[in-house]
Length: 180
Image (cartoon, rainbow, N blue to C red; front, side):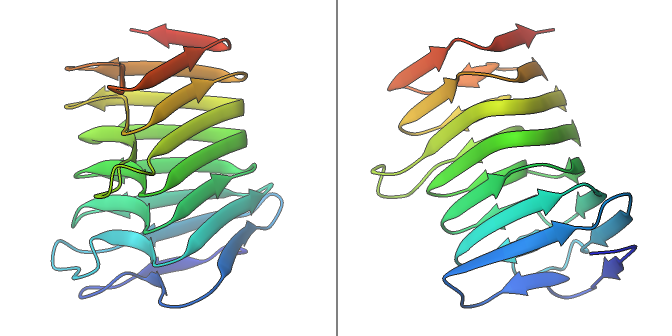
């Protein structure tokens, strides 16, 4: 994406129906915008049925008016770039996992900031190895996962009305984590 502005009144402006993996590349220095409407039938401004990777040196603002800003039925990987997210529900929802290995993610409004929950409860991992995450004004949990939340590097700041980290199974925090 290089200066893209995408909106759609009835579906996800970016919709990946079938792919082994899909990569959104944010061109260095670019500013991009993606927004859906409350009538979006896919439940996210960026919706993928398969693995989704976001990388590059650009910036992307994603507004999820229907439900989520970014959602994948499988894995969401953020390698770098800057994501400014606004959502009714989750800023990023990866049913199988969310893996952050770099970049800046700021979730301004949401129910849950990052969410990895699978109906089978076999998957549902959030891993932060590097990067900066700031979940602001979450009306639910900052980070929600079924199986585990691992913060081994980077910096994670969370402001939520419920729990900063919510996982019934395992939480491992070795990097910088701060609730405010």
